[in-house]
Amino acid sequence: MPTAAELLDFEATHPGHPGSKVHEIEAAFDGMPAARYYQLLVRAADAIEGQARDPVTAHRVTRLTKGSAALAR
Image (cartoon, rainbow, N blue to C red; front, side, top):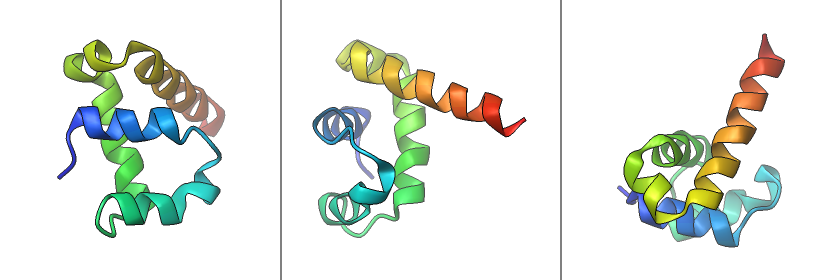
């Protein structure tokens, strides 16, 4: 299981559209499905450890996921 730091580091270096990152995610995280990656990424961004590690990326992830949740309503 990747750490919060590993997830945020990857996201910081691969901020592109989710569809174009699927193969990169699977390669970087031993075949982890993209859906699982995003679940763990959101948790990492919400965690104190993640916010301390990379506050800019954590904030971006949180802002984007909260925006998506608002659109789904």
